[in-house]
Structure formats: C-alpha cells, structure tokens
Length: 67
Image (cartoon, rainbow, N blue to C red):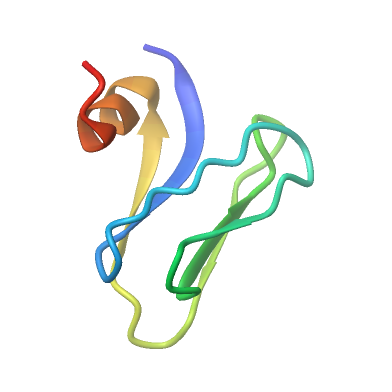
C-alpha cells in the first residue's frame, strides 16, 4: 500500500493531492486544502466543509476512477 497526502472535498467532489514538501493545494470550491507531500501532512478547511482525508494510493485511485 502506497501512502499519499490528499483530501477529498465532499462539497465539490475535487480531490487535491500534495505531492512534495510545501505543495499547497486547494479544492475547486476553496473549502479544503492539503499540504506537505510525503514530508508532513497538513489539512485545513473552512467551517462547515465536508471532507475525507485520503492516505493511500488505493483510496485515491478509487475516488478518481483509475483502478
């Protein structure tokens, strides 16, 4: 199982992935973000945002439909 640093926004359906240190990524609607790549995991969100933290490549591929 391969680790990833991603977040899935349940409000807009976007799944931004941070691939390297200081790779700060917002979702399309701007409610959630992810940062840190494989060096550290930082997620943030606006009040009321709905999201899931994605930690494995398998979870990410399932969300993106690339399995």
